[in-house]
Length: 437
Image (cartoon, rainbow, N blue to C red):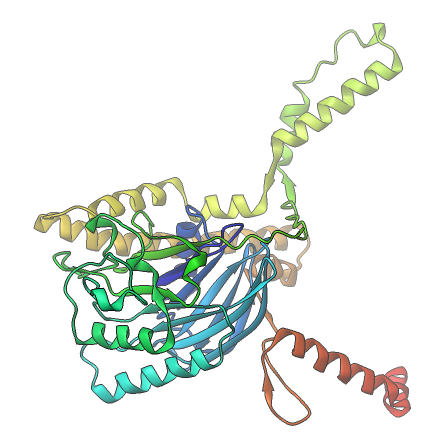
């Protein structure tokens, strides 16, 4: 899965792996919690949905897929950043774009992934026509994220307009086509702009671990904003691709709005709270003033609440991604990066993928049952239990305007909704119907 990140110095990244079920999403959330990111482009999500937007705890997930269990692309955009999403549009099940405003500057970010090397030329040509369409719909600042299944190799002198000084491997036919596409559209491939060791250049590894290639790229028409481009080698995520990340230097000189993240809601472990209360100093109260006694009780209550309080999200994460699973993921990560693995080590690595997936799935089911039982015992409110367990909510992603055209731009969506309700309440007959109901 390819990904990008952005922030005060935004970092877009690129990542590949199926998000077909909640277990896969949990694995991805754990992996990206260990790195810095603002926007991540994802491909091969294998989820069906046209311009779907899911609002989750710390980020929003933008997805587009046309076939269930196959292809699909999208983005993760972290909340509480100076990033405003203006538009999200799925072009095909291999390409999507998102328009954002970062620190007062508008960007178009495209996420794509090319057909495999076994695909015919007709499919490749259709894919590049789609890329041309995306470039035509982009703003003046454009960032392209792509698993191109192409090797550009070592740059040539006459290609300095789109390539830097550094490359990896030997160029193939697909690589030549991608370089020509960048030349035609004035896009510089950021992977080639910075000197890295060979082990920090490859982005894809074959299942047997013997072949390593650089086939995932980030390109842009504003290379002056690129501060760094790197491959994340320690992302603990089950994928044969490695995350490519660029850091952008786009901080605005003007005063920007301060973003304050809301504190997570705290819950109290009642048994632990009672135990902590008993540890308070209640001796010699007869020799203390009323105010001193009150202050002592207040301090003890605050201390006990602090000690017994916990975040529901942290509790959930710990109950699903247990210490045992974290240990297994560490073992898997070390084995995955080991060269010249023995047959037993290869078998162990294969088993670890399955064990971790099954453990997360089992813990998720166990956690859901625990929450449902808790609500049933205390209030019998099953709906509240399901609301508690709901990890995301769907946001409005598109509407038809008065001309019947599908609109995805966030500002235009707001205007369509505003006009609809203005017209609705101007109609006395409609208002009378509402009042009667």
